[in-house]
Image (cartoon, rainbow, N blue to C red; front, side, top):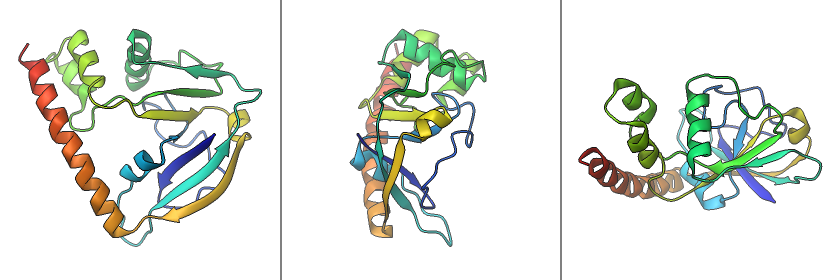
Length: 181
C-alpha cells in the first residue's frame, strides 16, 4: 500500500521510538493512506519547508491490529492518552480511525467532568473517519520503503487550512449538540 507522512523534513528511515507516547495509538510513526488527508496536516515552520513523504508499505509477516470506531477503539485511545501500558504490545502496526478532537482537548474535557464517557465517545467519533497507520516496531519500519517527498507550497498549506476550518466549524456544531443533550 502507498502511505504518507507529513513533516518538516524528508524522512527516509522513520524512528518508531520518536514522538509522543500519549498519542491515539501510542508511540510510533504515524502515517495515512489518504494522500489528500496528509496535506491537511501540513503546517508552516519558519525557516523550514513542509514535506509530504510517500512510502510503500507491505504488511507481509507483520502482526497488524485493525481497529474500527467502536468501544475497543475508544478505550485503546483513552488508555494511550492517559499514559497507560499499551494494550497491544504484540502489534507491529495498528490501523484505525483518528479520534476527531481537533478543536478541543476532549481528554481534558472528560477529566474535568464536563462530558460523560459516552458523550466523549460520541465526540471522538464525529466527522469523517480518516485512517491512521502507525508503525510500532522496528520490524514494521523494515517493511516501509521511502519513495519520494513533495514540498507543500504556502498556497497549498493555506488552501488546506481553509478546508480544515470548514470541517472544524461542522465539528463545533455537532459538539454543541452533544453538550446540549
